[in-house]
Length: 72
Image (cartoon, rainbow, N blue to C red; front, side):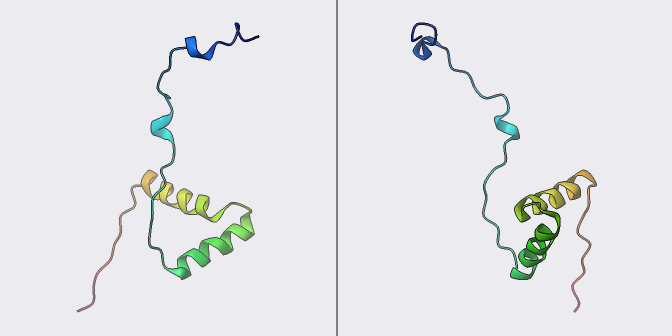
């Protein structure tokens, strides 16, 4: 069996899907926002971090921009 699966003889190559993997980052998010997505996660059965990612992906796909004005 060892002769058939000699891993030392195999050539390594880069993972072609590595660029598509999610990256871990740190964000500062208000507790009320986190609570909102956690509540939604309970109702849908989808983890809250996945829901946040889906919402942000929707913003990217629809090219949403923040429209905000500061009151003087």
